[in-house]
Image (tube, rainbow, N blue to C red):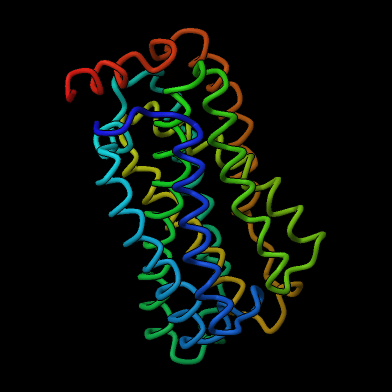
Length: 267
């Protein structure tokens, strides 16, 4: 590690990512609710914007020297039953896909291809930001029982600027609350799997399923009801129980001893 981990360093890196993404959105003139409307919008609003953000994150993470602690946990924790959490998220995404009205999507193959690319970029970027850099930075500054909340708060806050691009305040608030809740399940998944890669894939899969389901109807309010959201709510409930157990029995060394040792070794 080249740079000593701290919450402020992580926040600075995250703000830089937001600038990159939202400058592209401003330049293209896209409204938030229009991002998934067409293949062209997906290309500009997700693939281009988040793709440039991903490039930025690769450079920043490399300069910081945080790749190893961002991607890998120092030690896996948890019990076998905790795998129910990512399992429920996968089931929820599958149920969303089952409820999708595929026949209503024009050029479904092309749309699905570009949406897949875009959501993979989102999964990579947002997880590297929030369950990667935010956790590394947080562990350099605080105890783990605050790190998870810091990571979740960052995940929630990065959705606030959506209100500047046409999303209603009510929808933004709902999305912020949802992000913090589902972020808890991703944090637990990182801890039990030992790697950020699992959460990246889960994040991409969930976003793909919700975007394409919403796109299969004319209005979001008409979205076909599915059990996908119910499965996600169950994952959050089980995640809270798992989080409490992990923080009591499987904590990392305070405050991020493995990381600080890595800094000293590099020096």
